[in-house]
Length: 132
Length: 97
Length: 115
Image 1 (cartoon, rainbow over the protein chains, first blue to last red):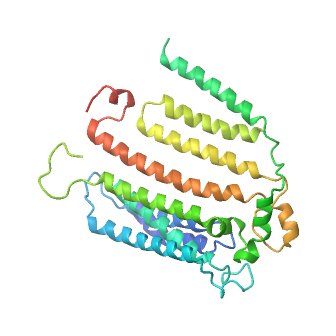
Image 2 (image 1 turned 180 degrees about the vertical axis):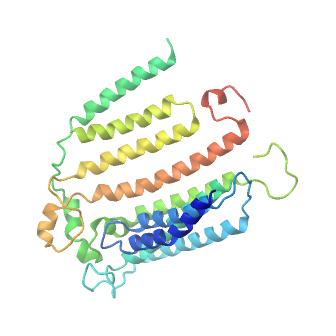
Image 3 (image 1 turned 90 degrees about the vertical axis):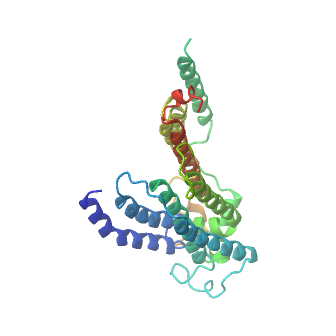
């Protein structure tokens, strides 16, 4: 890729990441939530991956990198299953005033977990499809 | 009689049936109050504590649907990784997928 | 009335792309256009004239339930968008396998080559 694309994508990466974290965490106040925030963060990673791959090199990705990503996402899924199975509600976060960040019961934790699931899945797919 | 013209005529017939089906709906913007929507809108704040009704529906009232969808996403990522992989060990043949 | 017709037009364009185009990638794009059209139709059913978004913001609850639009189709469309992403990803990886085996992406030529 050109020098302009590499420089601009390296400069823009932290701002897109910050926007995605804001949309994912403030899910119970403003529209957005887990899936939208996860998609924005995965877009910022995909920008870096696409801008920094060399031309037609058949780059065989190693098995260890993708196994690490899959282990993290599997762990998050197991935690989600167990906590939904027990229906454990955080009473501390529930009895505060609404419409501030420190409120909302169980939903901010679930928003972050859902965003993590979407990030790992989309990064795995883009890494596998771009690096062939 | 080419197949292409038969296909286009059948597409026009399907389009006519779709327009006819849509014309029977009530007008745009006349959504009546239903019981479930009223219950979700009124009791979303005191049951879950989040002011966003859509967020509390997706993660609290209908949480099992979201759990199934996460499983589908996980299996799709696993499937993409498995299909594209080439062989890593042994001699590299010309006609292996 | 015309809003529903535009959503159905998007579905019809998707059906035309799947059935009448020869390139395999254009067929996958047609699948995505079709599902976008049906999501638009689902969300525009629950609209109320002069209504607000279903987020409670300095309003009392009794008038909020009279003014807000329907939150239920929006929750279902969120799930459907993620499932559509999974379908597109697996379809694209199968297209990569087809290209490695046959060497071409034309659907009418693949029918004649018997790998």
